[in-house]
Length: 234
Image 1 (cartoon, rainbow, N blue to C red):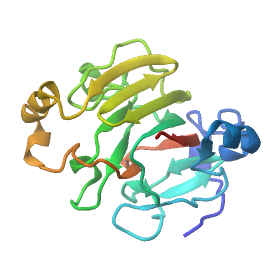
Image 2 (image 1 turned 60 degrees about the vertical axis):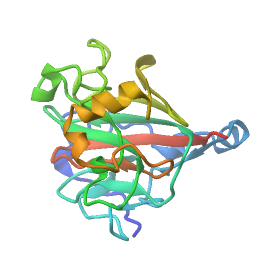
Image 3 (image 1 turned 30 degrees about the vertical axis):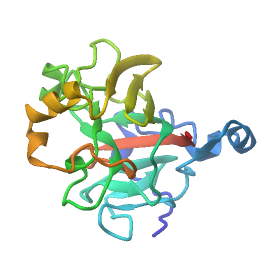
């Protein structure tokens, strides 16, 4: 289902107004330059084309396009790309409300009842106000619960943070605001040991897929994503 841009007064505060969203998501990119470099947009800044709800065929009402950003405005559950990806570079920007929490997951499958039971997560968080910010393992940029991200990189709630996520075979890099904050190798003995020591051990499919969907998490808080683009790697 394709939804039109909406104007929601409540989202015009806390960094989601016209000033904070001056750039339109996909519309701000140069399509020709993207094509020549192998990049392509996953969000056009106007509609929800290319996305759907997890284990549903349509985008839930809780996700809308607001001022050029794909925004969680109410309860709706996680959303995923309609396409699946194996090896890729993903770039986007996110802006979370004060005290907010969300996440970007990759290689998500629909074999279980939650995205996080299959897809590793790059944490999206207001470190200063959310309790997860008290641990670097669950702070912004972390490989949630497994690999810590350093402090002092994430921008405050209401400001835009730039992400680059590299997934190439077993190799994964998390970049936040131009800084590589996490790097790890899937399926190694070290990774297996970390998984075994966390809640993810109870889900056999966690981190095992070689390809899957990209997911944006609905954790109950307002969050916006824009300038979402991907480059598929060989």
